Amino acid sequence: MFGIQFRPGGTYPFFRSPTSEIQNALLWRSTLELHGAVLLSQSINLESSSIEEQFCRIPHKVSVGEVMKEIGLRQRRFIELFSDQVGLTPKAFGRVRRFQRILETVHRKSEVNWVGVALDCGYYDQPHFIHDFREFSGLTPTQYLARATEHLNHVPLA
Image (tube, rainbow, N blue to C red; front, side):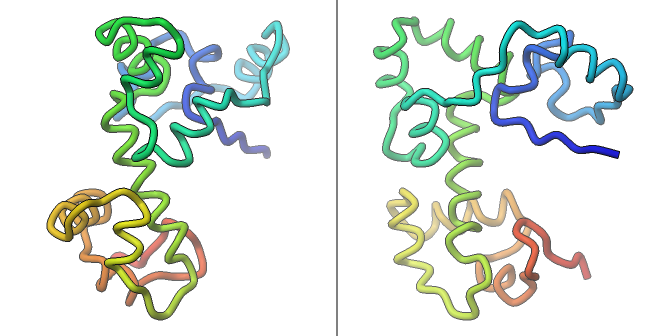
């Protein structure tokens, strides 16, 4: 048994369909087929570009416009390529990354200054923060903290 964790956009070279077409489907692929695709790939760039790193780490501080300007693509084409390779639009990806950053920040803490965390992660008001938190987790920040386990991104359902 083995596992692979892909970075955003990392599955694109190995699967036949754009990620945006399979984003909500369960993806089953034989180990041998995936192994063969990895072996046949010309190269795997493990070094991320500074834009990609910033877009993943601090999406609220790097705008899509800045990225498009840096790589020289028009908005429509950039969104199309990003959606195909990552499975989300750049805006949706930024929202998910911002939420993940919040979870990373509060992981294993018993008390949290939610206002400070929200501001540090790029939220400009509490309603926007709570809306995103509920949309992605199904819980309020306080409910999440009360149910959080030692495993990042996991809470008991009941």
